[in-house]
Image (cartoon, rainbow, N blue to C red; front, side, top):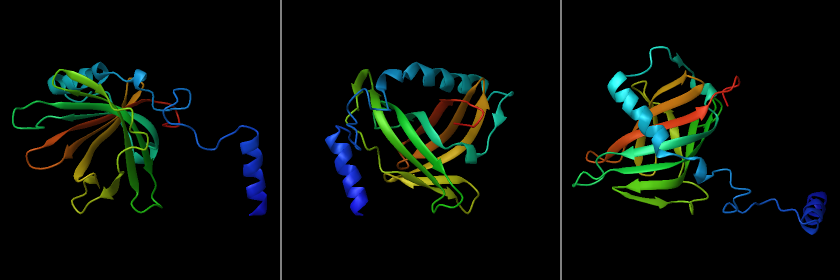
Length: 188
């Protein structure tokens, strides 16, 4: 214990910090400038008119660990039909040894409601995690933030990994959920 305290004091005196400021662009791994609504809108449009790509490769969730871009598109947000569209980064961990085995933390960065686009960059910690696994119906179900996230597809196509799902807040309020990232041979 004494050695740990001495090492921490030496680091602090040398100007090092073990805690980075999440709002500092140089240290924030969740950069809003790298997010685009267009990237997700094209995919939703393609799926609606053409369905899932036939030449896709289905993947197992054991390879889904890491950081992703995400989009949350709430279609029935209120009675006037105005939609809510949110972009950010998601941290996903999958482990057979954990309980629950799957966890997703969302870090929102930008939102679009109606014609208004606004920043959500003050969310440095992220939403309460979605956690879960397979339910009794053999569906991949995660809960958190007073809603349920059903993960339906995880596949590789054209050098990118895609994870699709549906999010339920209530009978009247639900939406689509999508995560995207570049594919590497290790799946990260």
